[in-house]
Image 1 (cartoon, rainbow, N blue to C red):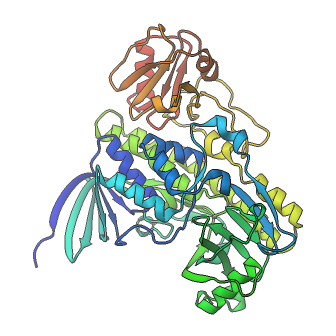
Image 2: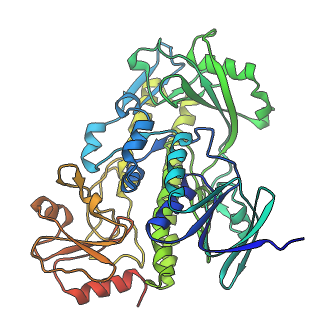
Amino acid sequence: MAEPRVENVETLIVGGGPVGLAASVELSRHGISSVLVERHPGTSLFPKARLVTTRTMEILRSWGVQEEVERAGMPREDVLAVGVGTSLSAGDYLRKAAAIAEDAAQSPTYTYLCSQDILEVIMRRVAASAADVRFGTTMTDLRIDPGGVVATVIADGMSTQVRARYLVAADGGRSSIRERLGIAVEGPPPLGHMVSIMFDADFGFLPPGRRAALSFVRSTPGGAIEAVDNRRRWIMQTGYDPAKGGSADDFIEEYCLAAVRSAIGIPDHPVEIVGVMPWLQQAVVAAEFARDPVYLAGDAAHVATPQGGFGMNCGIQDAHNLAWKLAAVLRGEAGRGLLDTYAAERRPIAVRTVDESLVNAMITFQMMAGRLSMHEAIEQQAGRRGSEGLVLGFHYDSAAVVPDGTPEPAPADPYRTYVPTARPGHRAPHLWVSPGVSTLDLLGPAFTLLTAPGSGWAPVPGVKVVEVDSAEWAEAYGVGPEGAVLVRPDGHVGWRTQGGDHADLEKALDVILSRT
């Protein structure tokens, strides 16, 4: 038998969903070679996730595809709303829209709805334009040695050994790589056995006041109706109880038609079942995010309930955080300790995100059990639709951040309310600096030093200096005429000073990059 051919690459990515694709794109932006392998022959055929949070939209903007995603998705003004009722057509149906105007000033973009099956096609094209992306390729063996990892992958019957310094495990909630490493997950038992029913139907009979991106219906069997294209394609999320004899096998076409029509509230409404996908509702976080040289990302590291739409987005931000750190170490610009900050930074965010998704799920469970009136349900559900405090206001506290002694913001509702701040560890705030240009557009993929004109700061290796001629910027970023803010490649502030020189900047970089 012929020996498998051997390939060498800096990073191997296992998993071609949104998180793996994001890792591929980000590594390429930092000049790092990677091979991505995905066992499925193509991108997802099922719209498993739909909501793209503001922070993820900002990342897509940095890739130059924000407008493409918006063209492919659903108009914000039409679908950023939530509804509750016995059915879509019941007299007790209530709807409440998201506070777009309230949140609009916080970012150059905003939360969007673009179903995963469409989003993945865009992301795959961007990734494959700069990296080696292999679908229909299965990893069958993995070995860790002093030089990194050696993985055996098979495609079209041909076996290849891929040797890589690092491996990004983005292989989903049932991650075989996490299991190989013996890393446990922490959290409650599974919350429910769920089934997604994708269907085509004309909802044109519903008035605008009954159109929503997401509607919770207390029908039989009850669940949620989600817009996929907001025209004819929809998803019903429902479930079954194995303790009561339920099974995914129950979801034959006749049962699915009855469930969907019950949710619509019209027994004979024309419906076509397109697909059925069973899944397990969970809220768990891996006990460890890394066993060098392997780094878990996305569902391999944390699984949130779908309530709130956080799972895919949290995973993409894992990749965004990890890629620049891998790149800095691989290029010899950072010490090995920088990679330790990946788990230190991302795991607390994952825990909080999963916990918040669990809070959202509990509201739904109470509604379905009849413990909330429709008015109580809509107020609680709508109150949790806005989550800018969670998705923009999170911050990092690790060795890759140089604190400046200032207190963190303390909004009354840290889930809903985002308070812009350039305090080290936080996402650099958005401000328009010229028509169509945000402060966020000035950042990355390298370190960026933002400062006022004439402050005296000059470039140092690995850092670009951008002078921002705006009193509004100086106030928002909390610096004076000689101050500066060092923003990391992932858009989070690493250091802030009211004045100093190159030696101070170099010292801050040494700390952030674990060179001390």
